[in-house]
Length: 378
Image (cartoon, rainbow, N blue to C red):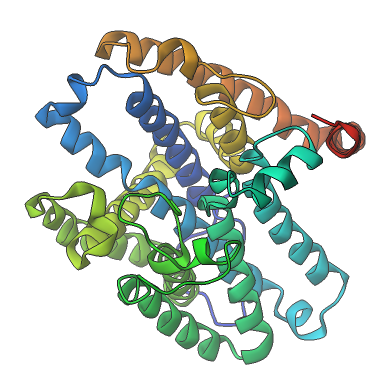
């Protein structure tokens, strides 16, 4: 069911699941798969073309989109279930467990070996930098943990938003200050921004700022009409969007004010376009896309294992890295997109319609993995 849209929401009124947010997640996943495939599989000379610079600008909005959506949903959860945060009931700890699971998946994806013994040996020998590296999932999970702590301690919704805004600004403004600070190997990747991406792709500074921005924008959503909210998203998106095209160094956009404003603007415009699709496109079509968008964690892990490599087996990268022209890359992308989202729809069907089977499969998968991981010598 979609939102009624024309009523002004009071601070205490619960907010129904926002259809546009699920559709927004779908488009973020769509562009994520396309961007990762193009970056890895296109011929190197193609990646030096001028149009590829524009591609990188747009692809740079994928990670902010994930973080923004996570912060937006986190604030609405607090808004709708504030008593659970205050009483610390069972539902609250279930949410906490899910956040920790997101962080765990971030490390699980980068396991160097399907063996605990080998993994420990690699870490001790300093040969597991990829495993310790903070990627988007660790950034999302840690940001959600911090927001949850703020919500529990502050309690008052306006104070929570004020603190979220302050933290968001600090995350955006301080990444350069943290350079050169030496911390323990397991912790440093959360704080250290390396210009060559040798330490982390998504440290908290500045990336968690997008998550806290999402929380602040969600508060705005609860206080105004839906039409006025999305109209504001469009206006702000159009106003800030062109700035980054005047920057010369696209890879370090997240370290510049104009670069981050461009990413934020892209997120706002895509959010507005998602709402426009909800209103204008057939319900059946948007319903299918929204269902796929709900399974963002599943799609994220699956596409990485297929496009790149994993501790399970080699992905397509060993076959197609730096070897495809544009037409070939588009064809492979569309095929991969179809496979991944078909599987995500099946996964969503099991979760929502066959929950017992999904739960049994969930425990069997993780049980089998842990047994092999713990006992496998090499």
